[in-house]
Image (cartoon, rainbow, N blue to C red; front, side):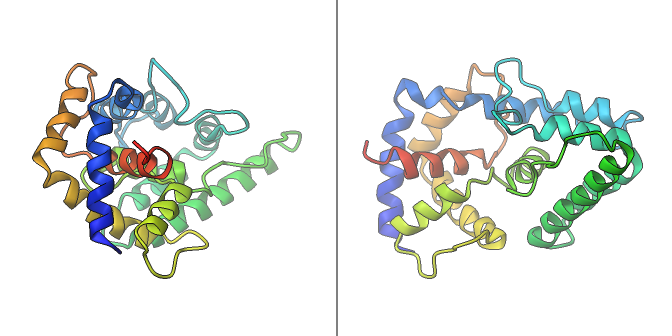
Length: 230
């Protein structure tokens, strides 16, 4: 990975942070703070807690887009088997195991829950829990552990690796590598005091989570993949 190119991309990102459009993604930090304030796996009503934790009064596009409704389907699965779902999330958040194994198990358990839901609701047309692209699973991780994980965008990740001349570009999901590269990028970001000052300034009035969040890695990857011409 060419660190010189990474530093050049970070300089471009710094210029971007000084522009008004840098505020376009602030809703993800707002949603992260809301999750931190409401997530409680010991809550008696797991479905209600999950529903409240994933809330943003400005937009739902983190968990609801055209033909993509992971929150709605997961709510149905939780209501079907709340105890199983509670254990499923507890397993995902157990840092004693590798992220790749935990994410894989979570998707497998979601498959099992969906199968049970279809058996209980034979007339349902629901065929997808929308977690197997790993977006929502990493959203859970990033919102639960802000200082350890960021949001997952495979296309942006691969694009940036290609720009950095990284060897053996991933053709399919490589979650362990994604996590390791995210950590390296985050280290470079936090070492740039000017960049961090610009970032913290845009968060100041957004009622956002500000305590060491790795969401800035996702913001940078998306910028570098799509707007690095600035």
